[in-house]
Each structure stands twice: as C-alpha cells, then as structure tokens.
Length: 358
Image (cartoon, rainbow, N blue to C red; front, side):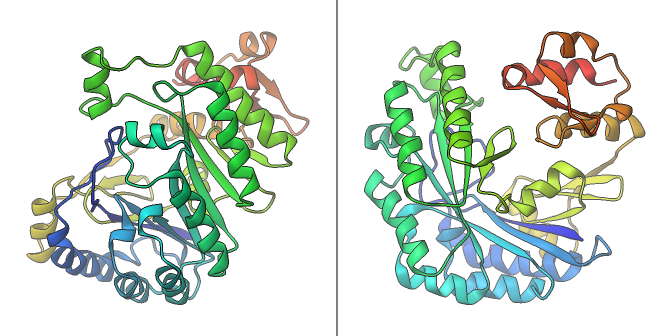
C-alpha cells in the first residue's frame, strides 16, 4: 500500500523560521489547483498499489476552501485510504469549515500550534494567538475529529523551561492523540537566521535545549504516550500512518510544487517554483528531477530512518561496528535483536547515524 502527499504552498504570511517551499501569492490558487488535479490524474497509480494514506501539507492547506479539498480527494479516490490527514492553521478554523472538511473525507488533522505563549508566537511570526490555538483543538473535537495532532516547538529564542513545561501540560490537557515536537532550527535564508546573524536574537543554550527535549520525553512517557520517532509522540494506536511510511520505506507519490516521491528505487521531486511547476504540468513538459538509489543509498537510508524510530534496526542488518555505542549506552539491543537509541543517544543521534553509514 502506498502513500500520497499533496503540497499546498500558499500561506497568508510566511513564518520566520520556515524554509519549506511556500508563497503568499494567494491569487494563484485556482491555476495551481488545476495543475495538481492534472498531476493527480496522471500519477495517482504510479506506485502500482492502492493508496493507503493521504497527507495534504504545506504551506497552509487551510487557505483552500473545503470544496477544493473535497475536489482533490475525489480526484485521488479514497476508497482504500485508512488515514487522510490535513494540516491546518489555528487562525483559519471555524466550526463550519471543520465540519465541511470532515464531510469531504479528512479523518485526521494536524494543527500547527507551535506554542501556547503569545509572545513566542509573535516572535516566530505565527498569525494566531494562544487562545485561538486552544479553541482550534476544541472546535476540531466538537466537529467530530477523534484523531488530532498538534505541532509544538522548543528552543525558541527567549523561551524559558517554565514556558515549555506549561506548553507540554497545556497540550496534554487538550486531550489530543498525537504531538509532533521539534527544536528550532535556524535554516539558512529565514528571518530568524538573519536576526541571529545580526545579533538581534540569541539561540537557546544547547544544554537547555537538551533539557527541554528530555522534559518532553519524560512528560509524554509518564502520561502513557508512545515515543515512536525522535520527534513524534502518540497515544497507543495513534501513530501517524503516513509519516511512518516515510520511515519504513513505503512507496509514496508527491503531488505539487516541491513535492518528493519514492517509487521502487527511484526518488523524484517537482520544482520548487510555482511557474515551472504549473507550466510543466499544464503543457505536459514537467521538469521533475529524479535519482536512482544504489544499494548503498538504500542501506544508509535504512540506518538513518530506522534509528529515528522506536523499532530501530535489526542488528544483523548493520554492517559497521556498533560495540562502542553499546558500551557507552547510547545504543542498546532489544530482546528481539534490534538496535535502538537510548535517551542519551537521542542527543547525539545524527553523529551516530553518520558513523554507521557506509
């Protein structure tokens, strides 16, 4: 079973930390929709197997009308889809909109909250406030969504451990089913990275960032949640099926500007340029690029992605010496013979992964 991702690049406002492909040219939504509908028709069966998960991400998909979302899902065909996720911004949420999304076929929401602190939301350029974030979750639940994920960020400039603790507690008290949480990355070209370079903001100390991550993991564990991937936590049974497919090697098709696909041993991607994408699809001259993965590439990806999850990697599949990492307790072997990262190891996971690649 395959996954299908649809990228909606439109945003009413660009966040200060984001380096994903996005645009504020909302007036081009209709021609973009026509292009992705054409790409869906041409490529939805490319993987040669039924679509099991659908993920509509961005950008900000909730800049589209619910009728547009229904049109996209009808074009894909959702008969065999188990999980259909859509990202939404808290500032776009109304009860009528959420009810229409549910009727269109969306059965899982991913709400981009990031923080429950108004000052931090302003600092990172979000266009909602804390109260809107809380109300967005509540409205989603009232509309009948029983699979809700929220995004939270830590290691934000000026963020205190007390604020972070409050954010975790607030999230748990909202009774959502899934939380994705990421430490702030100063991506090149973003407003926050420029502010850092000019000395206008100061990054959080690395030790404090690690303490914030440890507090998150501890809090979720004590609340009975499953820490199934480095940055992802869920109630038992609510692990994200679509994202899990990325980590376990499931084939997926990416629709839209900047979207990536993985079918067989080939990885391909659409241009991160609105004109290039729309013109290519419209005039049957797509400028999609691709690469064929070698056995070494596939092995390295299995190491990189597998060690990010609580399933780990079978020890028998690892081709390099892991003894030093076992002895220093940053990796451990499970009873089933799989190698997983310990809490200590999660702090240096990128280093471990790089060392284990061939």
